[in-house]
Length: 358
Ligand SMILES: *[C@@H]1O[C@H](CO)[C@@H](O)[C@H](O)[C@H]1NC(C)=O
Ligand SMILES: *[C@@H]1O[C@H](CO)[C@@H](O)[C@H](O)[C@H]1NC(C)=O
Ligand SMILES: *[C@@H]1O[C@H](CO)[C@@H](O)[C@H](O)[C@H]1NC(C)=O
Image (cartoon, rainbow, N blue to C red; front, side, top):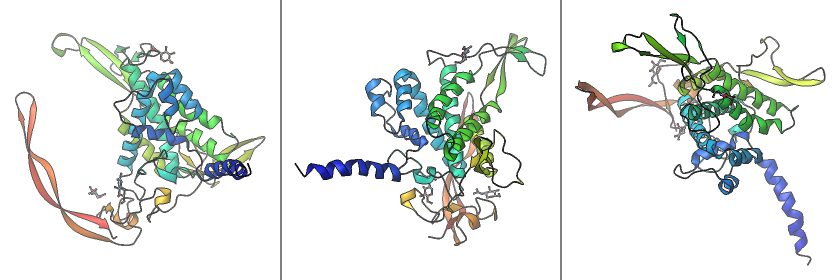
């Protein structure tokens, strides 16, 4: 039948067009944060039905279903921490109302915002999986008792340490492998791989030792110590600093290979822990729903920190701001009662808040 032809011809074309306008973004797995949390996500059939996963990630889900709980947790951590760290910035990590690209097309360009989200995502995976290991929730890993050392006070220690190697290896499989499947001489996959690694480095460089005393009435005759990961808030703060000092790079041919080198030859070569980006960011001033940018009209800003990034001048893009009074409810007159709780009253305070002109 002749009517079949247009369908056959347009279907591949349409697919191509769709692919071209909606390139798959490697952070689409973050949409797992949108799943209802009471259902298990592992098992063969549910894995294939999870939207936003690459074929390789679906394979991971099938082979190691027990880890998917941590992957969902990591996705939640990324959105929460991103919104916390950027609460006072023009781009405030706002999420799209639905769909798999949770931060909208802001992630499609190789900007410093994308660099931050990639680094935070790979770190969150390593942290969430490592936490599950330490709690004994995963079959194939447990806490690490081989790590030992001597504390500054001269104590030998070898407690149950966070076994970062399993979590880091998982993060590499989950977010690095999809990048390696792309053309590795291209700029964006190289940028993503570098920032993924920088995210994991932010954990490794901030590990610390915790100890517990044993012995009569806390005499500390015996101590057990172990290595712990930094709280995730600390990891996100470190990465936010790296965001502020991120290096703009460009794809450069070095011999027979390509590498990302600083765009400005005066800038020293980027270190492994630095965040790299390829493209300048849009100004994020105006509402642009197609790209997932909410704009800053009506946004709260800081009226006293004038030229800081959270100050009204910068946040409102110079288009002015208003001061208003708002009532906030805070805990006050807190009393400690025996034993062991704290009782507070609720106080209403009037404060001045500044918001960008609409
Ligand atoms: C820590 O994880 C690594 C990598 O999975 C594993 O080889 C090692 O045995 C683990 N260590 C312990 C003590 O469980
Ligand atoms: C981000 O800013 C927009 C517009 O100012 C606001 O509607 C939204 O609630 C903010 N989102 C977050 C997560 O702070
Ligand atoms: C505004 O900025 C000042 C100075 O940087 C800071 O002390 C203050 O806490 C900020 N206020 C708010 C509401 O964030």
